[in-house]
Length: 168
Image (cartoon, rainbow, N blue to C red; front, side):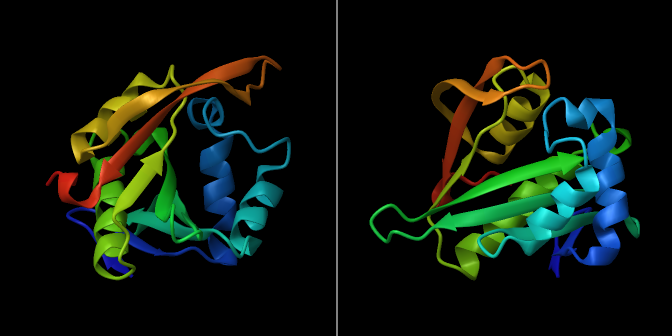
């Protein structure tokens, strides 16, 4: 269990699937977090992915989202990549930044990572601002990076963070 200023990160379990799928079903989350028509199956797939570590984000004893990470295993390119989603009712209170900061600190201190990436949709200005507050910097636009629910390809912004740049 990892404790931030306001949130707690704990390994997600099967009992978290309904809450996480419901959060991902919200139109404001689904816009940025795809997963097909069956979001319960998508969350189960994340839990079953051996290359991915998934944490439930809790605030005041309630699951408000999830944060996940995976590592590039090639030692010459070693880094960790993160993804996060929050219940829209929890946004604006700094919980997302707290979760990202808490996980990054853990990955530095316990896993020895020195570099981190995150890749929000280029149009997701709220996420980009939140990641910048933690210390992530824009690297560049990844053009036509992922297909949206509208069937069209959309750009993403690659952002990275070095351990010594972690803010807060």
